[in-house]
Image (tube, rainbow, N blue to C red):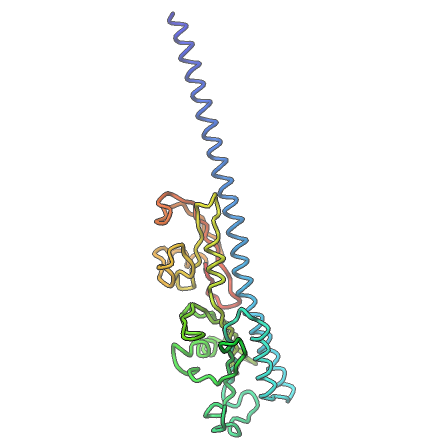
Length: 292
């Protein structure tokens, strides 16, 4: 009788251990599958974000190079520069506006000729921007705040740093005063170490927000975030958090500034449970200020 009971107990214990092991292996496999899927999703979508930013960089770089070529060949015509600027915006419907600004006399040396003339900068500098009117037509204007710290950072920062700059996302009233969350990418025009001017491309972040908010990596329960170079939310499931600083941003930004991804496990307020996090840097030209 004792031997029979011992046999039953032994068999029962062995079955429990086997079942427990199978459940653990299955759980581990599900966890590994989920993490692998999350990694693929994160890298795919970070590439899509980077591609949009790279487009703005490419358009701005090309415009700057084309106008610089006019100057270098002795054909620094302002009307031609205006046309190139307007065409660049016209050909990129996702852009809200663009600007092309030169240091005093750096473009054609004729600032004095244009100073005080209608539809020109008071000092005659070539400092233009284009946007769209309510009918969608491209309209040309003169820049007025390019020497003002803060509102003129699109010009002041590339001049100071002599490198590409992406501005911290900000709100601006486009089209009938409706505020739009956007960012500006600025590309300096530098020759032999001398800053001559800059080109900017401004675009709404709405498309990127829609892209990020649509990401539901695993069975629709997870989510994605996009943070700026300062650690402020650009996209978050809670819209009230957009433009606010993320509590966990400092350590992430420090790590991704070296171009590495980060994997962590922590409880997320939105999910209210432990989660697997993957943070990937989104490199933006040679700005040195990645998004995550």
